[in-house]
Length: 268
Image 1 (tube, rainbow, N blue to C red):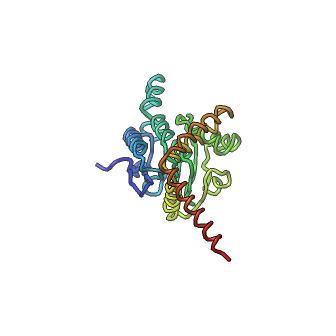
Image 2: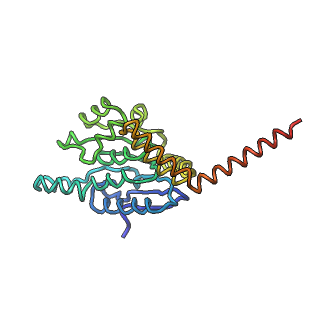
Image 3: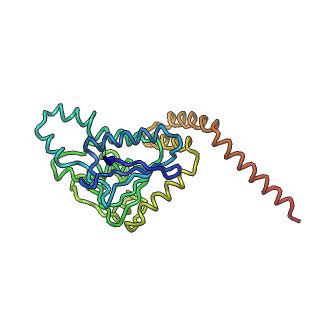
């Protein structure tokens, strides 16, 4: 049986693909959630991964919620729906993705709707196809973004843009997303994954331990008090100063400086 989420290794880059084209890569079904949680745990455990690319199979990034699953919630007791969301459903997916330790680049190859939009927002960087559209279409369904997307969209585009997107439920184009700063680049469909991989490889070329700490630091920067943030920075920096990767970088720098000094001294 083909896995609902694929994990491939490209050097130090983990390429993670939701592989359910039959449901437009909806990320709320139990099989996708379990597979994504497993894949992220694999990446976090493996120090050989320094960065990740996240995408959807085919021409859809992710449709978010799956209709039959949403329909079933309509007949369940409220407390059971709440429990499902927190412990079995989409929040398990988003908690796992939030806890991904390496920098993540979203290759948004097509529509990103609902919790699929939220999935893109949980990535650190986003490259979008010209055919990509983004929508928080919950208001049209009379429900809310139960995946945490309201928090991350507001942080990404500000309260007013987020309010327009949430309240209207209308999709925005890739070009509008670029204007808002929601995506880094907009490219033709065939160039999206290669560009995401190029960027991820560039990131992954940096020392892995520092990248994982840097991602944690950037997350904390959005919510920490200054004094506590400085304490955290000092603790993380102390850890980085003792790594083999940092020593190797210093050795290379020392060698480069010696070569420059020798070349300067050799000039008449």
